[in-house]
Image (cartoon, rainbow, N blue to C red):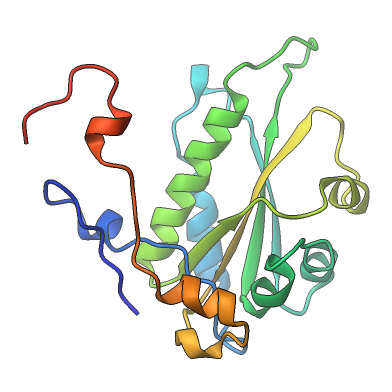
Length: 194
């Protein structure tokens, strides 16, 4: 199912066609080559002073990492996300080696997530980032240090028809049109005339 963005000016198809589905093919697999390319995209994203404060945990359906992440999904995420082919937990290292704060670590990790999402979409892999999971349990499962902030899990795989979702609320969300605030509401100053 395609849900292209209705934008005020034309966008790259890679951006215009990106959206976050919840219906995934429960038997499709993602190749190691595709996973490596997605990780490389994150690796080569920009970061403040080139600090590269991102860390990733990769989980493929059937491995212990996948089980450790999916058992900690919260709410609706627990019903649809385990059908995905792979998961990438994105973590931001929030302090430097001397203990000082990295104020832009979360921003940088967000950029890495965006780059990985675009590379995945370029390869025909759908991505839905989620924040609904038990961070304390995941921290314990993977022995994450206190300065590792879990930003999101990228749920990825081959998109399935919306009807694969057996929950009416999720099915309605899957079929709903994409909506964004207009530029006039989000640009504080300097809005160009399109």
